[in-house]
Amino acid sequence: MTDFHHRGKFSQIVSLLLVSYFMLLFQSIAQERDPLNVLFIAVDDLRPELGAYGKAYAITPHMDRLASQSSLFTNHYVTVPTCGASRYSLLVGKLPQSRQDLSNMAAVNQLARKPESERRKTFIQDFREKGYYTVGIGKISHHPDGYVYEYDEPKSDLIELPGSWDEMLFNPGKWETGHNAFFGYADGSNRTDRNKQVKPYEMAEVSDDGYADGLSAQLAITKLQELKAKDQPFFLGVGFFKPHLPFTAPKKYWDLYDPEEIPLAPFPAHPQGSSRASLIQSGEFNQYALGEEKAGLDQAVSEDYARKLRHAYLASVSYVDAQIGKVLDELERLGLAENTVIVLWGDHGWHLGDQLVWGKHTLFESALRSVLMIKAPGIPAAKIKQVVSTLDIYPTLLDLTGNADDSDLDGKSLVGLMKNSQSENWRNTAYSYFNQGISLRTPTHRLTQYFRSESQEFELYDLIQDPNETQNIASYSPQVFGVLKALLDAGNTGLFEDQ
Image (cartoon, helix red, strand yellow):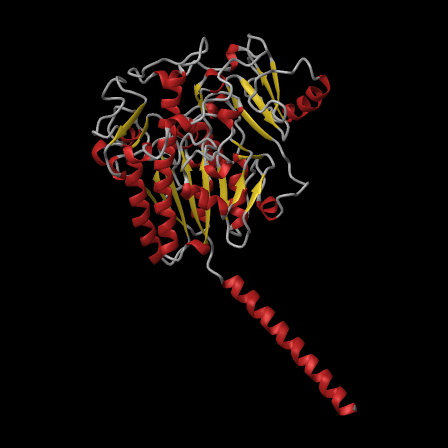
């Protein structure tokens, strides 16, 4: 019995040693695993009009598939509802500090035209300095090909994000420049050279490469093949144009929809108790001079025209969805998907007749809420309802890839929330700035303060009882207003103080 007892103890010791050995071995393998790559996909003017966001009429199978594998953020808000400023805030991870930061020229003025010692670091530059090979394709910052020049000028050699890219690429095709391609029509013309005598939509009998996003998808596929062969982790940013105006897409994407089944805006009217100054006259949309109707705040466009425009927007979304699908499929085919963090981000939302507006540039939900999904190896898919901000993307990417956050960022890593979507420790607020105002979003309300001569100074919306923001209740809910006003003040960076 004694001999048996000793043999049993010896066997236990051996088993424990073996377990310890294999644990150390697996830890060593994990530590030696190749660094995670990053595929960052930016989509212009993409509101949450996807199947994954509960819009069953939207035909977006590729983004929906990615969403089913990702942390899908259902309440993600941008800091500024205009392209260039939203992207600048994303890239540097900071709240707007001055009115320059609210301009489409934010990256140009704060990065491209400043000496290195005076400019902030973008997260792309951060990855590059940490040993990543960085490639940009299309619209990542404001300019469609990443270089600074005017709409009607030849491409310049002034890069918009200095220090960020090993390669900044774009194929303008028949349009010849990035700006022309961005506003391009299927015949090779564009809004600028046609002096805005164009419609805000187009349905053409062309292949996917008949518009610029098809060319960007092909360029991304080719570049992924090259990146796989490199002995270096990569950051690949791909910026797609659609569904930005003009709403252009090959006919086959229009044909996916029955116009009669496309819902109209739930509230195409002026919010009760709100100021007209809080909305916009849809100036960007009305630049398309051959549109059948003009949009404005005096009355809604006709239901027939509204349905046509919403059809055009959805066709553009389905078109870009197909291009994103091609890139994701190639990532899978190359065996890179399991070692790559994938982010899909919309730079802001877009009113499709909501509050009488056709465009962005407001501090309402339709303009500020956009798509965000993050697929990260080892983190299970989840739908996350907590309020998050574009500012949180920079620290999240560093966290997911095991890179140190050595910057004074205003956002917070989302990784803890991605691992536990029910976490009660999350901040649950997001700040946005535009139109002489600061807006706070919480899980239940939106409070906006405007620094202007027109009343109302404050607008408060109960997003649980009134999700379409039909009535300003600031004067009816003093207790809620008081609590939220203190939170809003915490996000006041002083950029409107001299008004």
